[in-house]
Structure formats: structure tokens, C-alpha cells
Length: 150
Image (cartoon, rainbow, N blue to C red):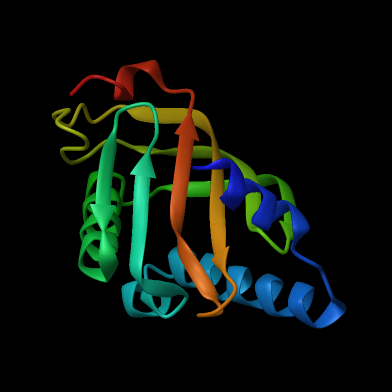
């Protein structure tokens, strides 16, 4: 990201209306994820969204890519649960930290299923598109070394 883009993000103004809009869109996204509602998840995203697993370099582009990401995630970990620890909402988007648990029952990021329980922490940035009034995807960081191999 270039310096000019960072300055633009920094200078965004927060209004109570914008805060409520971003908060509501994140709640819609979170509830849809809990309900395994992929169309509901897609309703919160821009058409050109990008999902990125920062440590591995994996990226999924557009709503087709986001659908693939969620289909693979929810197949690999059908009982996945995100226990929210922290959340920050601003005009740049949403930042959350969560504790994740589940059972590795399908292939994920090239890793074969182990059948074992998983537990790790994740931080996710949901960048906000001011013009489209939707999230531009997710930048995902996690502390599960066993999931970093390709």
C-alpha cells in the first residue's frame, strides 16, 4: 500500500452514522458466518473483494474466490467456532481478534485432514470501501504453525 493510500485512510472521518453502518455490516457478516450462510456473507462484500492469508500468501479474489474460501474453510472445519476477544470499528473498517476452535476434518491450505481438534488465535482486518459501502475482503493473520505449510 502506498503512502498516499495510507494518508487517505488516516484522514477518513468517522460519523455516528458511518460507525453504525460499518458495525451493522460486520454484525451481518458475523451472523452469516455463524449460520454457515454463504450468500449472507457475500452480501457484505464488494464484487472485487480479496481474501488473503498473509503468512501463507494464499489469496482468493472476487465473490467467487470468497465463496471458495468459505466453502473450503467450512468443509475443512465444519464445527469451527470464533470466540471474539476484541473488536475495533473505524472508518477504515473493522479489526477483530478471536480465539478459534474446531476439528480438522477436510483439506485446508494443502494440509490433509488430521481429525484432530485445532485451537489458535486469529486477527482479521475487514477493509471498508467508502464508495461501495461494503467490506473489501479480509486480511487474516493467525498463530497456527501447523497450518502454515503448503
